[in-house]
Image: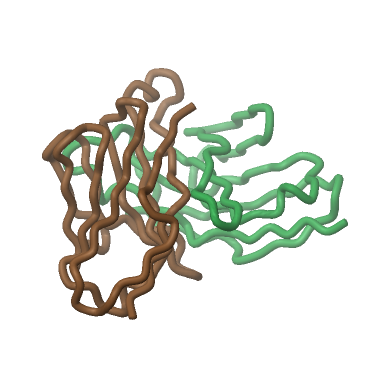
Amino acid sequence: DVKVTQSSRYLVKRTGEKVFLECVQDMDHENMFWYRQDPGLGLRLIYFSYDVKMKEKGDIPEGYSVSREKKERFSLILESASTNQTSMYLCASSTIRDILLMGNQPQHFGDGTRLSIL
Amino acid sequence: LAKITQPISMDSYEGQEVNITCSHNNIATNDYITWYQQFPSQGPRFIIQGYKTKVTNEVASLFIPADRKSSTLSLPRVSLSDTAVYYCLVARRGFSSGSARQLTFGSGTQLTVLP
């Protein structure tokens, strides 16, 4: 079974702090994703990485950056945290190997980090 | 990007069949439809995926009409443990450079199963 592990379930930080959210997957997946989830808005893609050191902006990248130095680890960075970044953050991974089996690649999610910015 | 609409909430009773419809009018030729289930304090979990017609697995069926502008997740004989939020995702086949803006989640449907 694929395991996607997010380093913290709950995190409380202050406005202006630099915040790091970490995600690790154990299935050698090529693709990794960061989403934020807010009531009534569903999941919105922040950043996506399809290979080590490769990244692409999603729908809401402003105020965030990412780092992928190793294949299994994808970090989300809030450069200067603000209160409007209080949210649930979800990490996911997928593999192109699933395309042959299933047509497309389902994503495997971690259990999320609930981040509060005070 | 596909624009996705799904009902905000639905109620059902134990033992009934539940159908949740997702509208995706501007779906592209290479887009696939995937449904996820999410319980409180957990990440979404894959349920089923399809491209056209009907797909069935051990937990659900997915119906996609010929024009592919909508899809319906069907849960047979629901139980209390099926109470969750269900998300529809439309995503371009494969992920590579340039694909980040080619996936869109719906805002989710809260299904409540009553005894």
